[in-house]
Length: 452
Ligand SMILES: *[C@@H]1O[C@H](CO)[C@@H](O)[C@H](O)[C@H]1NC(C)=O
Ligand SMILES: *[C@@H]1O[C@H](CO)[C@@H](O)[C@H](O)[C@H]1NC(C)=O
Ligand SMILES: *[C@@H]1O[C@H](CO)[C@@H](O)[C@H](O)[C@H]1NC(C)=O
Ligand SMILES: *[C@@H]1O[C@H](CO)[C@@H](O)[C@H](O)[C@H]1NC(C)=O
Image (cartoon, rainbow, N blue to C red; front, side, top):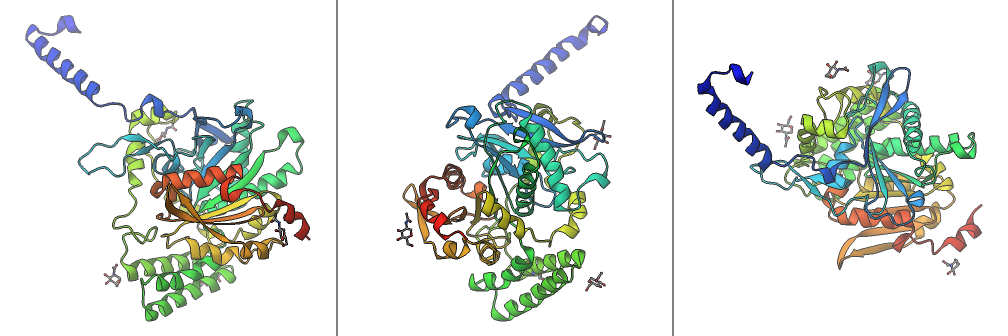
């Protein structure tokens, strides 16, 4: 080629080449080597169809114990249909997008000192299939309910554990946010039921579940928005009554089992609340602008990033949330999984945590269903002190614990809690997993005496 070029083109080519080189040298890769996951790729959920869950795994930076004993945290995003890459690159992963940047500054990743993989392994799953980079071979294969979601998650988790003999013995904690308040109890429940039928070597080593700003018992939760907003000074009494009427409609549709309309009923409540308050976002009533999680979408639309993460088809256009998955799970939204949490609190341990400023699935909404749980320990839990939790001299939040049940309110945070308060979120999850600080089992000896 070069030999056939006319001579007068040569200097021009040289200059052009030089220019290209200097730009690549001055703009570092969007995903620096240090930010690469330890492992990433696909976990099949159905080998015959090819449907698979996309994952990124980050090994613990400073494992607290031999790797074979170091806890593994699994993170599930909500939606339904939102990618766990939001959790990864916006909230609790080791590298986050620079969401405090000026609009003129380029998009970049920054190390997150509040990462949840400081001392634990951390696995993000794009769940259910059809979400994020996960593959749904056909739309019909996307699960329509929590049982379907759990079957796929169980396959993905067992396939992940099978990738490395060191994973087998590690205690697993399922965590996540928002609509994952449905997925987390569902997969926890499914694991415990499956474990009971499996030989010891094939069981999943579930140690606990943690739900952040979750939707778990929607029929109770949907009825809390009016009082929450009223007593926060965001609406007046007349607006409160109007909202209560909309809530009652959603409750009635739920009780009638009119699932699709019930979901629409809940949307109407939230839309009306949004309209009345004029807030930038119901996810955090203190914010003047919504969360900039769309930066994750910008990041993951770059071909170099998709390649580095092992995305199988780089033509896939990454979306924060899948409308298709949202539609498929539309009739599932108002169905409660509270009974699964009741099962888990007996057989495992449960943490419910919320950001203080969340108006969608926040503190009032969670406490409303939590206190109705059928569990022998609930009375003692409700009588337990709500302790003021300090971190670095500041009030970080409030912790209430009894036996296997913990509830945390994190100060200065909204719905995407680890994005707002990374160090508080990290301290909380580490202490809870390790039974340390306010989560220490000081009352253990009394647990047995009141169990009946
Ligand atoms: C569900 O509710 C809507 C709105 O109230 C109503 O038109 C529809 O007939 C209901 N469907 C069923 C199956 O009850
Ligand atoms: C609320 O809805 C009304 C009527 O649809 C509209 O005129 C108004 O601009 C909305 N307000 C806000 C803050 O969205
Ligand atoms: C890759 O993704 C694009 C965009 O979604 C799609 O059109 C194409 O068929 C996919 N290719 C393969 C081999 O799956
Ligand atoms: C156990 O319960 C008894 C009576 O309620 C109480 O006096 C005692 O301090 C408790 N012990 C612990 C370790 O909490």
